[in-house]
Image (tube, rainbow, N blue to C red; front, top):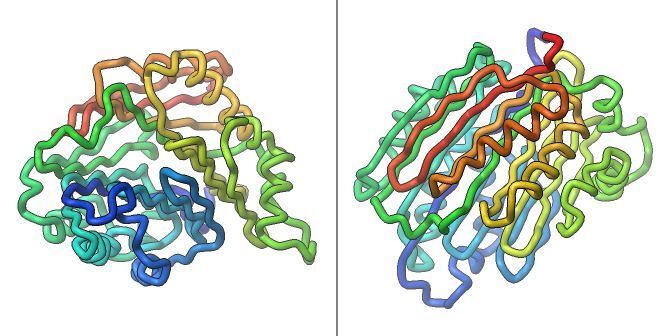
Length: 339
């Protein structure tokens, strides 16, 4: 393991809003791009590519992704970004379009280089204190949890604050957050660019999407991709009202890949399993962790376990917890059976 390097593990913030939308169905999407850029400046990242449809806007960032729905924002950032500093400006912008916060969800894995993180991300305790101090008091249902695993370097951190409303959770919906470390070295090389290749990040990104098989994970999705120089890759997938996103830090010693998607349990087990298998096969990681957040009692986590174990990996731990008005989270870790 390298002493220092780029932090692949993302911090993820999901904010749900409610209120009288003056422009029906538009809500947060009417925010000016300049206002969004100013929020991202606070976080210390920028937009490098974007795409949108009738449901939401998806931005690829210099450090991960941003998704803007009419009443929901999801922002995840890697490296040494200060993600939680986006909360106050986002709440002010939402207020300007007649919306108020109804739920906040913050999640992350265990940093590879925790000592390199700036305030307020120096520890989960500091993050929780910052969240508590910057969220409105009407979000009175709050819970923070560190979900452990048998692998000491892989824990899942969750903070949820809610006003108690369940309106934000469509029945049967789920979110999968997949974190992969120790990527296969040969496969990771596909996320490096040749020196002075003369290509734009968009062009190089499209080539990586095809060369790695990422384009086949969800063939129905419109993909917005970007390749960084000299290495690294990000993509957002847009499929109707659903997003997916992948981020890759391929350097040996601290290689990392992440995949996130939303779906419905009513899609069937086969679709979820097929997608997860494709993701893991793109990277062939030494360690996989999956956090499944569900709004119902449906056991999506069993589908996850079955799919990943069919690829020669063994589940090493499984932890579950319930969060106020935010459903349940099941966190599982896997390593190859030979270990």
